[in-house]
Image 1 (cartoon, rainbow, N blue to C red):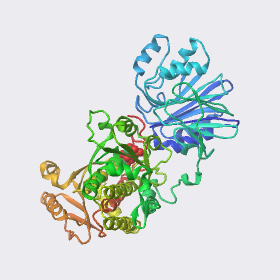
Image 2: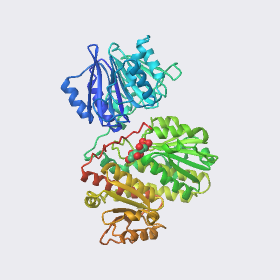
Image 3: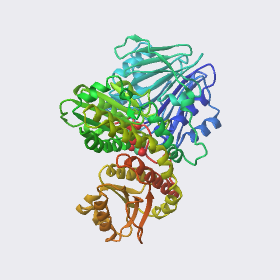
Image 4: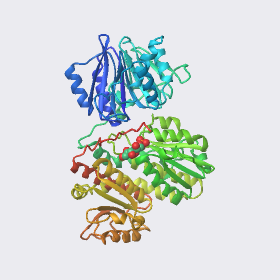
Amino acid sequence: MCGIVGAIGERHITEVLIEGLRRLEYRGYDSAGLAVIDQGGIVRERQPGKVQALADASHAAGIDGYVGIAHTRWATHGAPTQDNAHPHQSGDIAVVHNGIIENYEALRERLQGEGFVFTSQTDTEVVPHLIQSELRKGGDFIDAVKRAVAQLHGAFALGIIRACEPERLIAVRQGSPLVVGLGIGENFLSSDQLALLPVTNRFIYLEEGDFVVLTRQKVSVWDRNGDVVKRPAVELDATLHASTKGGYKHYMLKEIYEQPAAIQRTLNGRVSQGRVALDAFGPQAAELLAKARHIQILACGTSYHAGFVAKYWFEAIAGISCHVEVASEFRYRTTVLPPDTLLVTISQSGETADTLAALREVKARAIGSLCICNVPTSTLVRESDMAFITHAGPEIGVASTKAFTTQLVALLLLVLAAGRQHGNVSADREREIVAQLNQLPNLLETVLALDPQIERIAERFGEKHHTLFLGRGAQYPVAMEGALKLKEISYIHAEAYPAGELKHGPLALVDNDMPVVAVAPKNDLIDKLKSNLQEVRARAGELYVFADRNADVRPEPGLTVFPMPGVADEVAPIVYTIPLQLLSYHVAVIKGTDVDQPRNLAKSVTVE
Ligand code: F6R
């Protein structure tokens, strides 16, 4: 959450900062600000709202300088007001911050005692005052920042400038992501390399505890022990990261339509002669999968739903026991891992604070850790023993779509690989499921063709306040994902239930004002699901059913059926996800919400 950009160069850098922030808006977009050093002083501009408001204000004020820091905020402490927007300042020092300073209350009290005046409700404001306080005690700017940072508890990334030191920009990474971008006669800082692609494709990925001083010509790094270290520079192929809406009205719609191609990329090179290439998961995969007697999956949000589908697959297809839990719960409770547990984390961004913390907590107790991730340069990939990159491509819409379906593809490959290593999946069965996966790109095109029909029906949800989603078996997590999509982008309250659970409570909610959406592939549970749907109809509930066209679910008044192509049960969760994404998208458009950047959310959740 929150995005940081910093720049020091021989050219005016305001535009670099603002373009960087635009690219980081996915990390938070409730207010934005920047500070540059100009003629020996800090010049600061901050605005509530999106980066465009900051850009307009900065242009109107003619702000420019050769060194500066900027920030787009996702509020944690204090409302999204101008006073709470970053950078925060103490005299000639300005600071941007991503993360949370946990001991800010004690520090604030102490600093107020020293005479510092606070103008915001943020945790961040203690940082510039603390540096100022340390400077008063003696030593230079770098020493003062080091001493101040040593007093901070929590997870954070910082960018710091001082008006009388326009030759340097200081950065600290301690629990929140931060990269350095290398230029010629200029250097940059950002929470994500994506922000800096217009100015460089060479990056240094900082490690936890790194302290960095950037000048125009040099980048100096100290590690957590205070030793000078040389971190390698990595060159990226910038064309891979280009992202535009490509004619679509929203990134989310574009990303929904990209799923056939994204899934093809996930599969490319991962199957060979109709079977899973074991080394796709890393060189130790064959050994670790054979040894694993239990799988523990940890993830958050949509990625957790992918893990939940995989639990059904691991137990039904591979015959291996599997638990799945949201990372923020798992990390804070006392847990018991069965012997020979393989830890699997799932994350689009690879920077989700709770997932990372859970990995760090559990790693030593598991036989190994594997992450399924979309961002190869992410912290999660670097800290896991093995990584499978989904290659979904950049996902800009805050609501996850193609990241989810590519995670599912990756997980099904993993299940097959594990099942083979345990002797529970025969070569024929593996080939059969791999063939189904290979057919997905074409099959999904057929499902996307339902779009106009879904768009028409979406009108009926515009005035509703609640929706129920139903599924059974591996379709239950698909229903959960459908409910999450609807609530996050249309702000309609939505809940998912395993259909068999309806009669144990939620049926009380059903009346003619409660749309009920169900996913109904043709499988062993279809007759049971049909009975559950009858229970809804009997209470005048309005039903919308995505049903296999051969499942004999017939439309009738109050029951709308969307005919889905026949699919094998194993890949059905991937296929049935698509219409639910489209439904949420169209409902959100009808409601006029900010589809790509829904209120109160951020794409990369780097705070606990
Ligand atoms: C919902 C959504 C979030 C993320 C969650 C985890 O559409 O995108 O629920 O899935 O914040 O993020 P990652 O996958 O980056 O760890």
